[in-house]
Image (cartoon, rainbow, N blue to C red; front, side, top):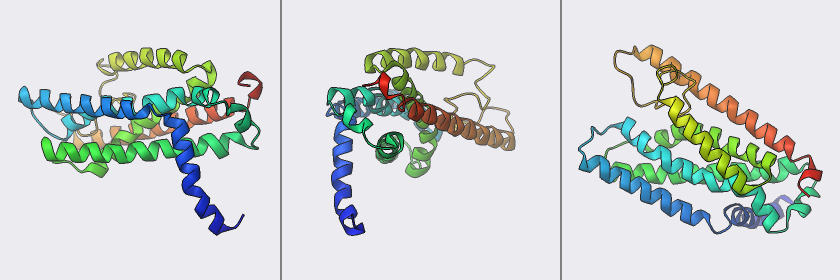
Length: 237
């Protein structure tokens, strides 16, 4: 295959994989995320909450989780439901050629959606840098998304993974508000735009950097475990 033929084929491959990943249901998750974000902004304005970049980050966190939830949790099950799992497992280096590309496309799509949401927040609530906001939000999204992907390769069930992820997210929210974790880099929901009172800016910056390294490292570990699990074909086919 020549390079020109590859370029012509690429849009069709991207379109086909996005169709399989989102399975026509992602649109409803997108609408739900937008609806929740709009509701949260309305509540903040109605209650006259102090508005800043930290608040916008908090308002976007839940819609972010909704955006990554469906493609990461139900991706493997969608392959099985569309009866293409056996075909995909016949491709050499399946883990790199198929799901590696799919995960990349999922996160690129969510990144641009977050830029759009941040721009809406700028117009309606408070001016923020949409690219910086989307970039910072991608760290917890990568962590949660790859964790869900890894669990889906273990349970091999979208519904089972969904239940586990809901429980884990609730636990993350609970522990994120404890004094022991709230202001440390172990806090998955750490808000980089909200500097705690009486905290030295240099110390806070160091915590943010460590937090992003922790989230990125965890994301890579979860992704590699998930991709390696896909090599155990006998458990899927």
